[in-house]
Length: 203
Image 1: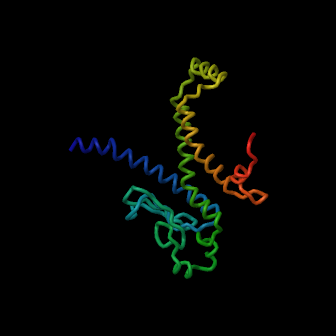
Image 2: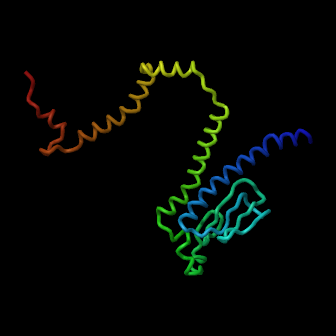
Image 3: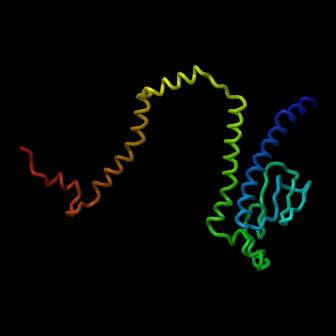
């Protein structure tokens, strides 16, 4: 029993805490960009399932913490479910004054911005965490700095494996371009293959 409690506190609780932070930042990215684009938001939830704690803000959005802390979602007005699937019946019955604020009625670029805001928020969070770790635990080493400046004065050696890898990557594209050029008719109506076939014999 003690081992199970230790395992729970050592692995499960930290995992859920980190996951909750990541989900919150992700969903907050969707929420903020949707709010900036005038999208009506019905629910902002951390977790799934039954609501444990919730409240409504002055914009009419329901903020809630749910029982299953394995994700989250932002539900827009007029969505069929938490996956933001549009509900045609709800959109048809919506108040005409709220119709311009539906997610489905926004422009393509606005919808792209709302969808992309979540992953971009996580990328920004990653850089901020790495920068904080660098400031908190990074150390300046004069010896490493001098070695770095010394190495910058001369180019690094290129290994044969790097050259082979570059050729292996580039040569198929070069061959494809040459093949395409050989099969393309020339301005005179003949392809380059015919140029070599009809060239005068060498002496």
